[in-house]
Length: 246
Image 1 (cartoon, rainbow, N blue to C red):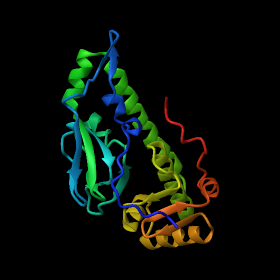
Image 2 (image 1 turned 90 degrees about the vertical axis):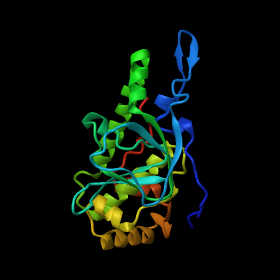
Image 3 (image 1 turned 30 degrees about the vertical axis):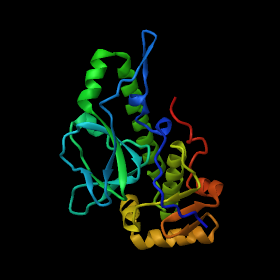
Image 4 (image 1 turned 120 degrees about the vertical axis):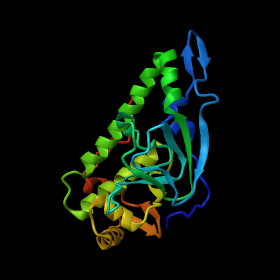
């Protein structure tokens, strides 16, 4: 059965997507800590609270050090546009528009680290090499978004869509230093259904079918992938997608 752990699990800085901004930079043979004094560490956002809303200005790079969020389209249907987990940046696509396009709601008590956009721009003007880190950061974000869109696009079968979703989450956890085959899904079945364009009952039926087929074992929101190879094959999920962009 899946392990039930209630302790707070912080992502290590080396496995965090914002480490490109936080790590010291070598300048003229000296190591300079660029974010000392400007990095706001582990701000608590309680379950159900909104970190930012659609239309808010993009003022900070924000990364989840522990917990998870859902990104919601601000329309009448309140559709779920995505999920973000420990070690992942939140809505960096807003940097281009200058405003956030989604509401970010905490799915559980979560902690967020942040660096203001102004601070990042000031450092970039002072140290040109820092711009390369920003480009790398945005490239990685684009890679992750395109990867998931590719996995889900064209899949009309509910089983395939849910298999791709679970395989993608498993890989994302592994990329940030967490177990790939045992994890807790903090979102409700309604959220998963909204994100995948399925009915809630359909999601429940498919999960039951996966359990019967020996692909997963679940207890509440805790999951264990017991047939990883079969699940990935069923989802047409390439085995080498755990490789990070270098």
